[in-house]
Amino acid sequence: MGLHKTVPGHRRWASVLLFGNRQPALSTHPIAESPSSWNRRKGSTRSPQPHGPHLLRRTFSPSHPPHSSLITAKSFSDNRAKTIESGLIMEHKLQSVSLRDQLTAPYPWTATPLIVGAPMRVMSGPELAVAVSCAGGFGFIGPGEKPESTAADLETAKALIASSGIPQHGTTLPAGVGFQIWNGNLDISASTVSQYRPAAVWLFAPRHGQTDVDVWTQRLRGESPETKIWLQIGTLREALDAVRSASPPDVLVVQGAEASGHGRASDGIGFVTLLPEIADATRESGIPLIAAGGVADGRGVVAALGVGAAGVAMGTRFLASQEARIKKGYQDEVVRATDGGANTVRTHLYNHLRGTFGWPEQFSPRTIVNRSWAEKQAGTAFEDIKKRHDDAVSQGDSAWGPDGWTATYAGANVGLISGVASARDIVTGTRREAVNIIQTLSGL
Ligand SMILES: Cc1cc2nc3c(=O)[nH]c(=O)nc-3n(C[C@H](O)[C@H](O)[C@H](O)COP(=O)(O)O)c2cc1C
Image (cartoon, rainbow, N blue to C red; front, side, top):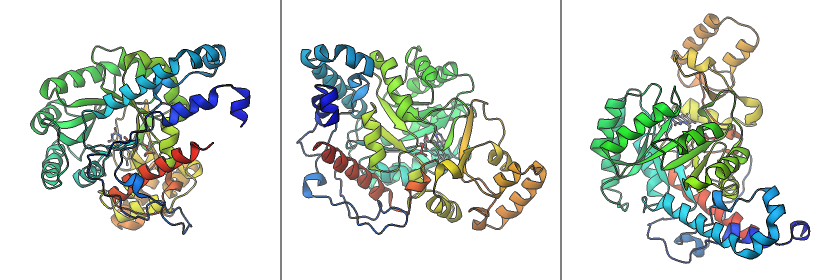
């Protein structure tokens, strides 16, 4: 094939990259892969992916090609003979195994490729987070309406976990919790983490960059040393500040511009570009990377692994899960919408219509557009839009949709989501699809 002809040795490299870490061992996690309709595309009647017994209980570990194994085109071309033949590939592969193991070792209930349920404010409650973890993923509870809400959510999660049979490790809960730094309450968050000891805390959105992150990291580590710190960033600068700081995170979540929730307002790019550059620049730190933004199925997982991620985080896909804490009108709109490039936008308009002000200027949220956005584009005064918005909200579910007026935060990947499914089916189906693609690619 072309690659083989133009870049001698590349084929072999790709083979190591994708399949070097296949593990024949049986997973200890009780993953029950159930038939599902999770992967039916909009307008399609395609059957669920076949899932033979060989995939049912085996932990499959495609090398998360790691930072380390990502050789830039230039260095690859300059050094390819030396690199390929000298065993550096093996070194990269070993680093990859080590980073992947480093990522998942504290979370023994997880299967690979690791699928993470991202923390989504209010939308990802304990039911969703625990369902994701029970399926071999890693579920995060999002920030609640108030700082105190997180403790109540963790109490519920604790009860759900106790009856789930999910393997635990040490004294931590097999689920995570997300905090937004700019408007979070560190005292309340620290006492909540101290009491419930989630396996990881996911930090995001500092007003003053890494300085604020360090304060949170040090305090939370002091309260619960076993709890890992995950930090979501969206630029190379933030990644470098994090790995060089006095309190580097245990995991970096690299959020691409496709993501919903809030992300970089004006200097974000897609993770296919962002993540490998960060991987190259942070390689020496040994901190594993998780890709977020735009992933909604196994294809996105394979893309993320291919550019150096150790796992992926999905948010929008889980808005269309049975366990999401979401209004029906909102969820219906996530399922209905297509063409995220045309029909989603980053804007503070909907925050302001809902009465949310004060976000640091470097962040803005992605949302599906509707009449409020159209009116703003047409020059209608904010107060007039606000009035119609508030009227619409009082009507209930019709406030969402193309003729609706209210916030529908969702990612650019809405066109990949065509139905509501259980979190278990989403996690296991996404993982299975990724494995199938990797196996198919191995024949190239
Ligand atoms: C409705 C919604 C709310 C979110 N809220 C948060 C949040 O409170 N904290 C956070 O760190 N990330 C939040 N996110 C962003 C996610 O962490 C993640 O970056 C994003 O969902 C990944 O992109 P995707 O939506 O395309 O999967 C939210 C995402 C969505 C869709």
